[in-house]
Length: 114
Image (cartoon, rainbow, N blue to C red):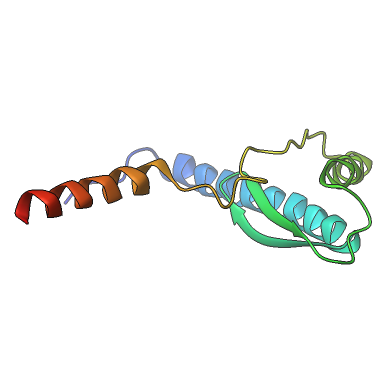
């Protein structure tokens, strides 16, 4: 059976650091979620290092304004982070390239078989 790598102290420190990072991430995500919600935006999902948000009919700011507001609220609480809009926004209806290629392969296979 393989022995764990590192001393007990090193493994404990690694677990502690993981807990600190997760706690910090949760605090920032909580600030962001509250900010977007208060501005009429729904946080739909956390994806890697970001949130997928969607405006409700009650949205009081544009996405850019909401991002700036949320970033300022993070700064006010001591989190010096920079928020940015990622390419997904406005592209949610675009077909994924992998699906397009798979569909083309199916059409080609059906033509060959039939």
